[in-house]
Length: 122
Image (tube, rainbow, N blue to C red):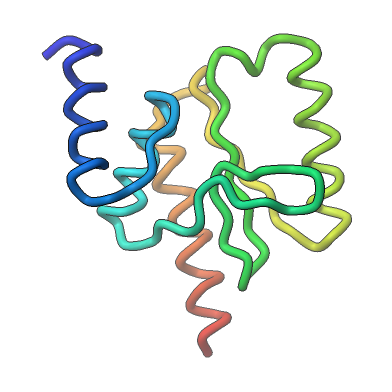
């Protein structure tokens, strides 16, 4: 199956389940978080920023970085966003399309999210 076909299939699944869509990378992340039972809020506003994914109750933000991340102005904005979020007590996790397996990164992110959600529920 081609990358375009996978993107279309993922988008169709999200639409079928009334889940939000975004970039093709965000769509893949949204679907997996949903399937693994830990999809937080998407495009969640915090101060002057809009987060890709957020779990406000446990102050976790997840940002998904595609190829645009390597543009200098985007990188500078990401650093400022991360500093703002951390200064307000949030843990910022990043999934980066250019630094290894998305699946492995997602697994690590999900472990942290579920651990914090379980700790918050205790």
